[in-house]
Amino acid sequence: MRSVPRSVADPLGCNAANVTGTLHVLHAASRQKKKPRVVYASSSSVYGERPDLPKREDQPTAPISPYAATKVAGEVYASVWSRLFGVETVGLRYFNVFGPRQDPKSEYAAVIPRFILWGSAGKPLQVHGDGTQSRDFTYIDNVVSANLLAARANGAAVSGKCYNVGCGSRTSLLEIIALLERMLGRSLTKTHLARRAGDVLHTLADIGQAKSDFGYEPLVEFEEGLGRTVQFFTGRKA
Image (cartoon, one colour):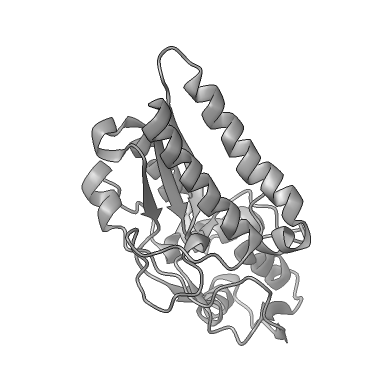
């Protein structure tokens, strides 16, 4: 269950999917004769509201939502299974993944596909808070690349560890809206709503460790990825 608001609404369901589900995968892996490597999805949300940026893997975790708490629990279980049962585990702390084929219509949809859908339809964009909150938005191609690199990396170097996967830059919601106005060729109106429970204000990834240990580099920077996503949802080349 990947949604912070949904985890607030259904913390038990979130725990069942993200913690118990992860535990089942690790347990199944430990029962294989030849121990497989488990590359699993963690999240930038594990860092919580700590003000220090960029986020580094050696900083303490401080979750502020049930979703984030389940991701911390998954990391702890993976570390235990790596040490105790010899299963190679690699956790990837994704920073706000976006791209084509995200569902923009879900109540829990990510902000970028929803903004594109509303903007292209001439509807007001719903902004939670003042819009200055920022994220290290990570285009899907970068995430796929990180997964493949982590799967192939030297086990002695990566097993039992967690890594940030982002671009190493951040963009505010207001900046996204300005870019979308240019890409969609129209002015966009905004409706400001209350800040959502469990949301953090800013994220920014330090990706140095992933670069060092398995050669991760962002393949697609944010603006290019946003343009590709706009083209997918609207058919319009941004």
